[in-house]
Structure formats: structure tokens, C-alpha cells
Length: 243
Image (cartoon, rainbow, N blue to C red):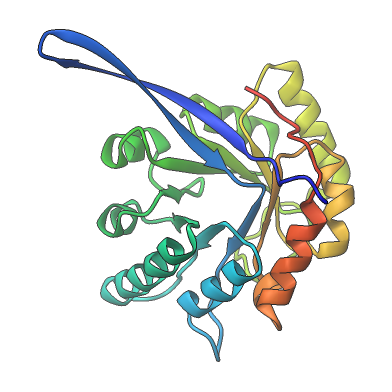
């Protein structure tokens, strides 16, 4: 029997004063190894794609809605939150701290031009998961200074789902950045992202990243079966970065 998929847990210490006594509460955030990023599709809604992925074993959904009015985006987020709650999956909202706060998502993923993670933390609270975006080691350092919980590093290869694409990294680029992280005692979980196929999993994980974030390779075609293939491909990998 395959061993359970490992997860990365971050511990937060929250101090509060109650009846004149200092109480320390330890909270944990589970950072899964596989993230599914939703996308616009002609035949399926974001929530339908999320449910199909969850049926395939995905435990982390990043809702990525583009070019939609706020009210429609909010409705999509609420529908997707219901699905994630049903399957016990983590819901991360791409770009919008306001949407994440309103639907009580587990957190938000922020691009380099989005709200500062530090400001987002003040709005969403210490228990929320906040992810950052990086293309270089300098980006990684900057994101870590803002106390992000994980980093999406990419792209691995060219992808049509991302506008204004940064230079691709390939396996060598990931290896170099992970090595630099270790040399500088940076242990935030790092995810490879961008054009990743299931046959890439072994090579990518060998670079030392924590996990992978996947969009079209799961969402196009048989989403549930695609998700199962990625989930199985990640089975047995130990955590590459510890804190």
C-alpha cells in the first residue's frame, strides 16, 4: 500500500490576553503538494471543474477568474467554496483579497503586481494562507520578506494560460533556485508552475520543489482522471523543504 501523500505544515503562534492571563494558541496550515488552478472553459464552470478535480483526489483548489465583473466573480467563488467544503479541500482565491475575505476562502494567491502580502495578511488574518509569485531567486527572497506561506515559481515551460509570461525556468532553473534557497536558509514551500504535464512530475520533484501547480493538464479533457494521474504521480515523495 502506498504511503499517504506528505504535507507541509506551518505553525503559527498567536498570543492573546484573556482574564489577565497570556494564552498561546498554535495553529497549523497544511500546504498540499498538488494545486489545481481553475480556468475558463466553454462547457464546464469553475465549480464543476473544481468538483471533478476533487473527485480525482485534489485537495487544493486555486480559483483563477479573469475578465469578469465583481458580482459574477463573487458568485463563482461562492459556488466553488461550497464544492471545496463538500470535499474538505483548501480554496485559494487568485489575485483578489476582497473576494477571499468575503467568501471566507482559506487564503489568496498574489501576483507580483497585486496587493502586498503583508497588507493582505492584515486584512485576512494570521490564519489565512497567502501565496506569492516568483520567477527568480530575488523574487523568492522578496516574497519571503513579506512572510508568504508558499511561492509559485515559474513558468516551467511556455503556457497559453498566462499573459505576459516570464522567462521559462526548466528543471535546471528550479534546481539552481532551490539550491540558492538552501544556501540562504529559505525554507518556504515552493511550487513549480507553468505548462506542467504528468510525465514531468518525476523530473520536477527531483529539483527539490515542494510540489506542483497545474491548470490545463488537469482541467482539459477528463478532469477527474487527469487529477488521479497527477495525484498518483506525487505519491511517495518526501518533503523537500523543512521548517
